[in-house]
Length: 66
Length: 518
Picture 1 (cartoon, rainbow over the protein chains, first blue to last red):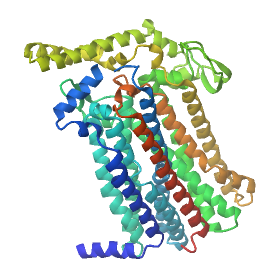
Picture 2: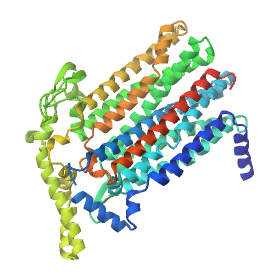
Picture 3: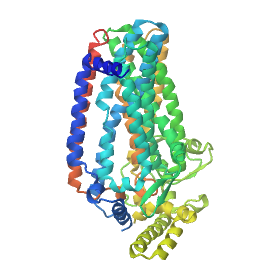
């Protein structure tokens, strides 16, 4: 059963024509998004400043009540 | 934190979010609608057994695949932005946003990923009926995965089913079903996916028209045009119906947005509906004067009828909502600001008592804060406390009204567009009418324009709120440098433009190749 499923996907990917170009675009896009943008530009702001939820809560309350 | 904060940071963060959402929404509607059109075409193939329908299905499936591949995951960038640029907001909304987005991720993965593979790789390898089932599951899965983000968006416009925890500064979900089935969420979902159906129908009709103009693929073109026109007509009528419900809900839940989208300054009984208006620029800094319209076409009593089903109903205008109309139960903005300040002050005192270890005071204040009467009369105006000037509670009226009118006019156009195609198809004369074929082809960008206008109306019209009445946009942003937001703005602009160019180029090439060589 699992072998049949794997074969199904393997044959499907192997017989792709336009799909190869599209998969390349998808992989390049995901690489840019996750390996460049997320890693270097999009840190989670609260996670990068605080470790615990308590600290994050205190910070946000301070922000919205000051 | 109040109105004096760095507005350039707020503007760039908003600009970046708008850019990402606009580009994301260039890919999504075609996926939503084309998936159903393909499923209908494949159903016809299974029913008739005619191999021409298989060829038609496979051709549109290829175009669907291109759009799906290029658009997939572009929405994830919005989630990056929540954590980086909108951290106060992300924390404040708590699990309200997290749960629907998590469901979206799981649903998108299991339904779409599994059945998309079967749909593309399964021809001649699995039974025809199971293949058809997979195609329908792709359509249903794609549309259902849109549900969750729209539920989250609707909650921001009409918060429900939650309570605010003053200890954590987070909203906690207390009733999942109230969030999922809020009237705004249900209607927003139906209105949005239907707009995708119309987009795909015009896309299919337009490409079909191109083939007829080139005197190619007649069977594919005429059949595809007819399917698209019937599906598009039903969708566009339903779109108008959900649009009507949407206007009623906006009038009920977001009266300032309704006043802005109609440029209504002073409310009255039996308010007319502006069908078309040209605004005159104004130097009025109070923003409370009468509309500066150069030209207007109105339907008498239209707005009262649209929002209340009663031609004599009172619809409040901008001035009423800012200055208050006690006879209609409308508080003034000043009163709301004062009430919001009381809630904000109490939240501050709760925190201070907790930090000072004054348990008795902390418990007393917290009990008072959570009292339903205090929540209703004070905390529900929490967001107003961030404003000094009531005029800053008014959204950008020209952008709101123009986007509303553009969306509505195009919506009306689409209904007539599909009726005309059906009539031409019925009389068998669509191939001969070159002029109309050109109109069909040139109409392809219009549903995109209408869809974007709808989002501009929804998002600009609800300003200054990121969560209606609870959290203004200026308080939702992270305190990061505005220049870092500018850098990522341009990086996104570059990435998305490249993706869009790639999509158009690959799509055009594939359309030129056509179904024969596919």
